[in-house]
Structure formats: structure tokens, C-alpha cells
Image (cartoon, rainbow, N blue to C red; front, side):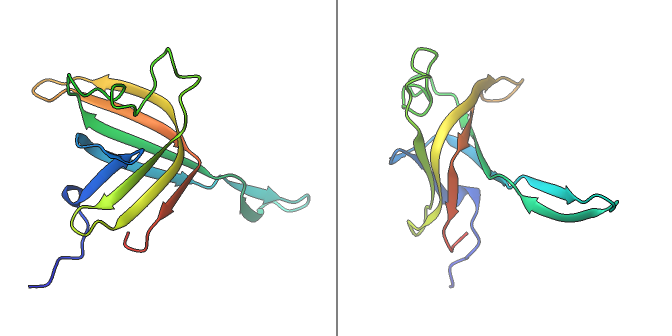
Length: 139
């Protein structure tokens, strides 16, 4: 039987600073290119649209575990070390093959939090602003 080539969330591994994060419930990687319209005097419409910036955001949803907080794992800073916390690298790996799917470089925490809901596991969330994302051919 041929192996299914489709990637799914249960077939990826998330690693930060080379350490596998086993409690990740989901990750979203976003890239924006800051398109800006260029206008000319005497012309009502847009002459062209050019990219003026490149921004990467990463949002991690995880399960809150008492003995394995995101801070204790070294994934996010606390108020005491936020100004000296170094950028981190986040990678997404295909669990079946070990192939690299994406590498997100220069991640600095933008926000973090907890989410509570009735009849649900408590969630930990962290958002990073990143310098660059590189996707492997597999994704």
C-alpha cells in the first residue's frame, strides 16, 4: 500500500531550540508582505502595487501542563528576563519521515496567555514575531 502523501496535524513534530515540544496543540505561521499602492498625480487609479515589508508571525496553541510550563521549557520569557531573552528558532518536522517542513528563524515573543473554557483543557498560547520562515519542498 502506498504511503499517503498528505500532511496532517497528527503527523508533525514541533521543535524549539532543537527540543521537541510534545504538548503543542497547533501552530499557525503567517507571512505578510506589506503591499502598498503607488499613485501618480493626474491618475485616479493605482499605477502599481509593491511589497514594502516582510513580517512573519507564529502562533502556538498548547496544553497547559503544571510541571511543563512554556517558561520552564525555555520557550517564552518571564517578566524578569524578557529584555535579555534571546531569539529562538522553531521548526516543524514530518513525524513519519523526519523531513523538515518549515524553519522559523529569529522568533521573539510578542504575546502569551492562558485560555479557559467550560468543559475544555486549559490552553497556553504564545505568539512570536519572527525574522524569516523557510519552507521545505515537502510543504
